[in-house]
Length: 417
Image 1 (cartoon, rainbow, N blue to C red):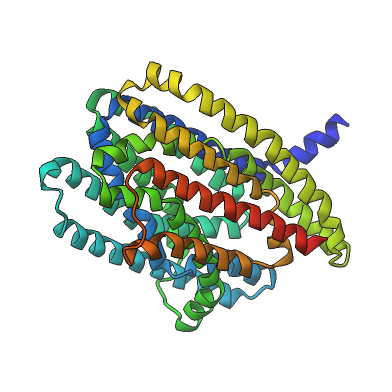
Image 2: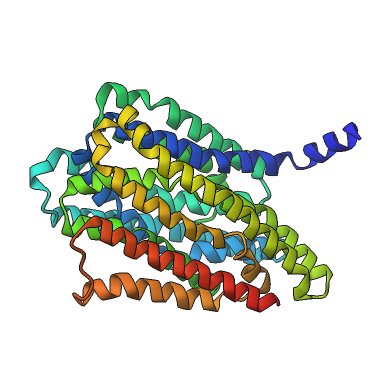
């Protein structure tokens, strides 16, 4: 029995190392954010966050090519279509560099039209970090796809874990240099991530662009990108609104709300990693019998309810004394954090939602996400959506997210009943 378990672990060591690296990322991010709020003033952090919001919006520039590669490279390899694999890889490499260059140009244009003169040193450093982020991220994303396609999970997981460990260790820079130290720490993280992934592997790639392969990746990946883009931009609408309608210091205080929301989705997201492959396998073996998916729906929903509700209650009760004790500069953000954590109830849909992926029934999700985008950015840009206070903004976003979650749960149940 022990030998069997040992062989099982050894046979899946790559996946285990990769999962360890993946799970270390939100933990390290939470710790770093806590230290940021310990050593950096809310005014400074507010300026920084308002500028770094551009990373989410500029991610659209990849047009879904990386999403397409993520699916197609593995397919080409499995189908022994070596020429398509080479063309797609070289095209993705060239395109990632093009996206990086275009992103840098856009950041320079944004900086030149910026009005943050009174905080010129802070904003300059934030724009430097923004430029480095948008330049390295497309290339890092592309190489991550290559490693996953090659089933080299052990090496990729090692890269992620190493980078996270160095990132955490470099937190000492914040202790000595404050915000400047944080910028240096973040820049080192990006540089190491890029070097680790491109080292050696870059020499095996051709610098050649295939128009047909490019079109194929966009055709496959753009719908996937659109879904994830609408989702990610919805979740930062509150920060966008605060940036454009309130003082930057309020965005700094609001970082406390972002911090507590790091905690809530960890377990629901972990469930998707566990349930999705199991549900897909069972669904395939059953001859596409939807009834076999019901246990996954019930289990994931119950686990989420049993964990998310108590966790939200615990965070809600403890946030005030913890902040008063460890993060006194951010006491003004306690009410924002309490209101925001209630919106974490929306994460109960994450586990059951994997069933839509198994059934390949994601159109309704796109429609709902488009509705969320219209209810936030759409109404804002036609001057209908206004909030007199940040608390009202938070409750509006909570209402939309929880409503979306409840609808998705009901829809998933309808699809498998």
